[in-house]
Amino acid sequence: MSENAIDRHSHTADRPAEVTDPLLWRLALDVADAHAPDGEGGCDHLLCAGQDWPCGPWQQAQRALSLAQGGSPDEAPAPGAPREADWAPSAPLPSWSTEQSRRKSAAA
Image (cartoon, rainbow, N blue to C red):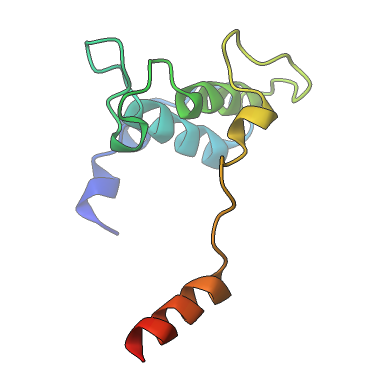
């Protein structure tokens, strides 16, 4: 286990009694902590650079925390939460075979 894993908030925080899924709760807490506000109205996480806070991952972490505490999966997302269509990549992601063929042609 890495040293960073030991310092995570989910390893030191007291888990609420109503948590029914401890693993989901710990993971969601770590994601929410990683996507904290930066003090300038944005998300502090490198992958969310330039995005306003609360970012999509933080909002999804809040939903996961609710689910881990017995919340309903059918609950409406928080206001401003990204819809599933918002999560679609703007361009198709390359497949593994595409990356492999690029490497082979570059090596030739």
